Amino acid sequence: MCYDGFKARIIDLPIDKMKNNLDFTCVMSPKTGVQYGSYDLMRLYKDSDSKYSLNLKIYESGNSFVNGSIHKFWQNVNSNLFTLKDCQQAFKILFEAMECNADKANFTNLEIGVNVIVDFNPDLFLNRIISYKGKAFKPMGKAENSFGLVCETAEYDLKIYNKSREYNLPFGVLRIEKKITDSKFLKRNLIKNIS
Image (tube, rainbow, N blue to C red; front, side, top):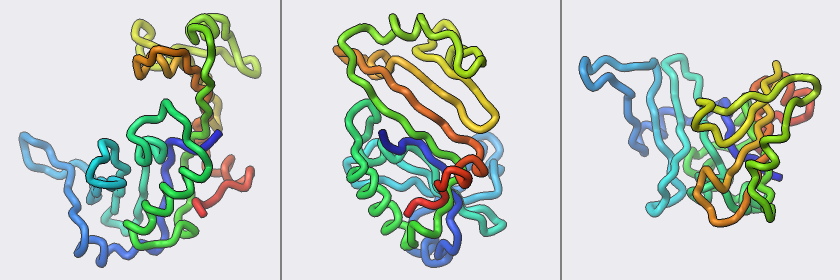
């Protein structure tokens, strides 16, 4: 089990230094040229061969956030094995690129998940799931295209889905994931910063 998707607020990011050394873009309307948000965006890649990036947003207020899938950042997909050592190395590279310490980044959202290789079609398992702690599961996304289920609570979402169908794999992979969306829940469970 390891981290996947995350969002973290970065405290004391060397903004001026980063803006001088790295390329940022503004997200604008292609029709009007008006900037969509009050932030500058930087896409951070592991290396030149990477297909997947993490997003660094620096707002006019000075607040900075980095978000995305640390698993995909490290391996371009999140259907394979991602160890704690891989996760640590990925975060190390990320924070070296941003020239700041991981202990200055506080999680606001976090996905923790596991891929389970199974010898059956994961859909057979998914078709039997009804509820979690008395709350009903519902299809992820549009029901007709859904490849999994989600149970939403006030503090987190529990997702269970057919990862082999998502990535068109020739073997069964069942993904079980907890997406924590409440930063107070993270703090109560002693998950505060990335370091």
